[in-house]
Length: 451
Image 1 (cartoon, rainbow, N blue to C red):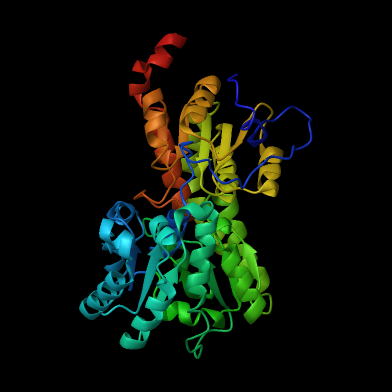
Image 2 (cartoon, rainbow, N blue to C red; image 1 turned 90 degrees about the vertical axis):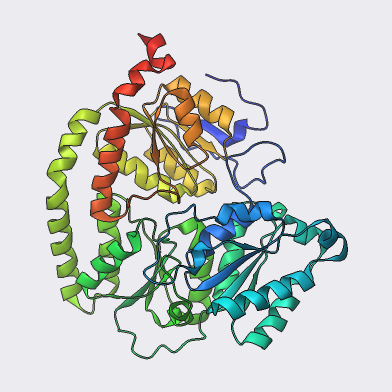
């Protein structure tokens, strides 16, 4: 066991056999210089809003912040590719001294005239918060001149954590909701919130709901369009996939438009099936929807289950570490790993709350390490202690795994393989097996020492 710093101890729990779930500290602002795996407020806002394909996304700040936007994510569009371009006001020293408002306004007018977007999102970065640019005033002036919504996203990185960025994004996008015509929306209709169409996952889900007879009014924000978001208040139910990023939007829509919401996950056989049944139960006035849901689940599971069993035979007893953005994603991953015979030795998240961590402890096996807002050193030491065979995480965790000689599975926004739905579960099993069973790991130093 590694020795933890006293201030970190409340954020790490080792599950003891038969012990009740312990209260974990969480939601703390990461200490400057701590090299936390958790990203800043600006990053959180971009995660949510980036996939809106027919809008301009402009980073108001130094050019370094805009590097995050250079087409590094797997969010796909069925039409406009405008969101794949990176735009920045590129603030320089003189802009910091005298202010960047004029530069921002000129940038907006030029880009809107050239690209003719449906809307524009302006992301405030740390330096903008420090110099005090009135981004909202600039947005109002440009909107009046161009006739399109120009929306400020108050995402100064130092203001808090990644979750604060989610909230800033939801507040910005909510200004669009309720401004469109809801005529023609089917009586059985939903919005999918917190699904980002990584590797085309939104299209898989839309097809499932279409087979059930349910219309998807808007997916916020995967393969999203401004006009769809405007009329999202016409849907009868919100299904929240990434609860950390979109619950605040769902609550605002429930408060103002009376649209209830349910938390769902589209990863793994159990959670995917539960998500379809949740929608079918809500629209119980039409019993044929539930019948179609049951038929769809039977067909899809039958198509992949035999192959999943073959992978399970080869993966039984292997151990995994999970470190992802939201805890709800971790729940699904633990269930999916159990389905293919693997144990979860370490599980953690960047944005989980106290209830999330209690549920993780209840799900976990004795001895499992549960961690909040970890850092590279901790994660590396825990992986070595538990001798895991696989690390499931994002782009920041990949180097940790490879340096330790551990197989890696990308479950973040950079991936190019769909993991949602039933076909996604099969893709996941294939990737896990290919990573864990690769013969290259026999040459890794930690494995050589163990022999």
